[in-house]
Image (cartoon, rainbow, N blue to C red):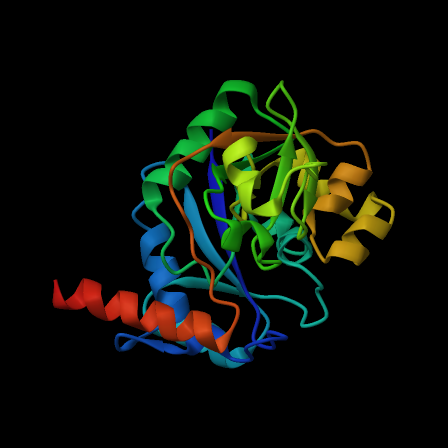
Length: 249
């Protein structure tokens, strides 16, 4: 089984433009993501899908493989779909470029879990333990069925616990935090441009809802790993502090 790991790297981030090359401990943010992905045992190839010549040349400078994509791509999935013919994998693993603390062991676990069932789509989740994390719209929540499949993804706290004070929600019910990593079966990703535009995707600004609304099954698996994407200036400063702490150690 061949696994293509693709890191979509967009220059014009809405909340933090140019973040892919923001400095973290003397290296670009994107380099940290790429270098961690390269530690995987199950990756056949690692490719950075870029939309800007500056990022393209930077990736090449540190020895990575970059492929130029259309700047108009609206999501990481669309960006990867656009280069599918250049990928060798039976499974395509999508790791967002700002996942600079992603663990290779989690990515290998995702591949292992996918290989058992060869799911249409598979993605990890972890338990939410604080009200702050539950209410943060930057943290995507997922409602999970008893068979381990996603019922819905939302930026809002779901499900709503009727008659329970919100301060007690996380102690009364399991809430799940979606980690933005996706494994796609090749034929499922190939069908992307045939899917109808999703009203849910447009409303929540969550790309996985296009597949869910079209009737595809999305398998989830639990992990204790806690990812941290960099979406804001505050996230970037937090990441710099964590990187510095790691360097000093």
